Length: 393
Image (cartoon, rainbow, N blue to C red; front, top):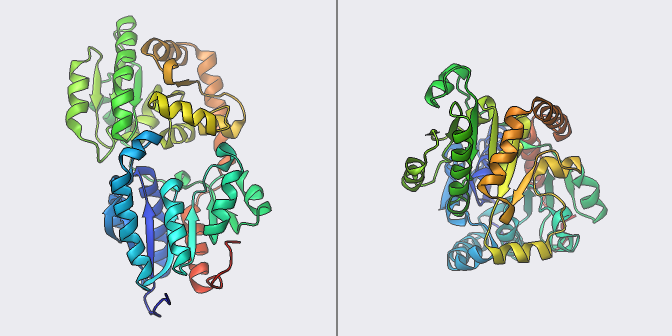
């Protein structure tokens, strides 16, 4: 279907989880500073809505992790995809902008290409984890690709994809950080006491699988060192009730602070962190931490067969070696967590070495301005879209 000409171009945007919501919001804000006449509609979280996106669906509807968890969620995913396909078929959409979340977003991009809508994907699928077989699928449906890691650009360009390294969006995050003394008061950590962050993730499945073991690890550590204090920054969008019940049932001194992840990472002495964006945020803060993760046994078995990675944590992937310990699946036990955290808290040599190595990783993430550079690439695609029928790149 031919797109209707319009003096106010409409961009369909889709981000599928909390981190994608923040990264997408930055791009929307940067694009609107340059082109206030743009209209954004799509799958949006609260930050995207605040930035000016008209939500067709909340991003939380897509925030699922794990192969079998996704299967259970298929009716919702299909309903969202059908509705977005209607928008793409309407002729009103000038560009389809997808952010991360490749399992869903590449399907959406395929629909966009069928309707002759140019496609732009921000935060590339991790083909270095899944293998190069995924490159062909991306090349067929994506006209332009914005990359957050420097080592990705040559790989994608050699494959014929119009790919551009823009830098990492976390370098542009400006989440307010509480003053140290104020934060420690809120966390119940008097001066001189050690403070440990507990970050079990931003998805319900992660909370269900990781919060209990993290609290048990905190209890083991608190029994050895009664002066320790713990703080859990509850992610926005999570039901506070089950978290409050679990914390109340734990003998460990844990304070729950809604939306205070940046302050925890800035002021804690060490942290237990679920695999994901928070581990990279901890890297940027040079905070000694260990990565933990659990999914269903079936999802883990299938994932190990499909994914070719020695490490799960981004700091370790970028470094090509282990900087932060990774406790995955059956290794993510309370005793192992407590043991590894003890090294980070009480062994000065291990602690300082990790801080130095994490600081070195930050230097490889580029310079601030990823959202601005991505917005420029988006507006360039809007002004000069590919010819109908051409491939992405």
